Image (tube, rainbow, N blue to C red; front, side):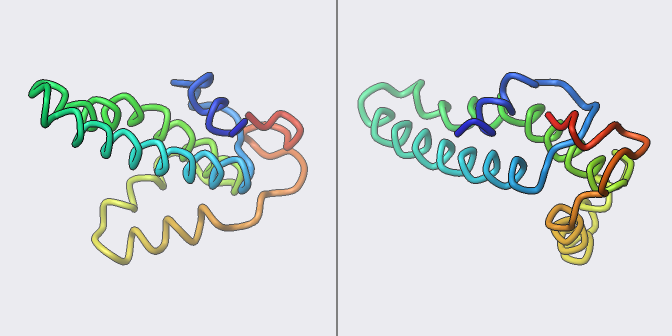
Length: 119
């Protein structure tokens, strides 16, 4: 849960590095939160019509922190933020991006900071 909270505290921090565990734990809690918000929005939309958009609002709010977290994870593997755009290529780009996000961290310092300065 600490990683999920850190994701929101570093809302638009695109600098620095994020560990493999930090990225995937925040990702997991974000998926769980999206699922819960979707269920709650679905139930409440039966009674209050405007709450049907609650899930969309959460997704929109989580977009920037998710992108920032992914960029920091790419920095930890020694890649620039530009590599996030490879995910736009259908299937192959997405698979390649997931492989990079699961990859090992660059030990020590790299051009994006020291490993001890992970966010």
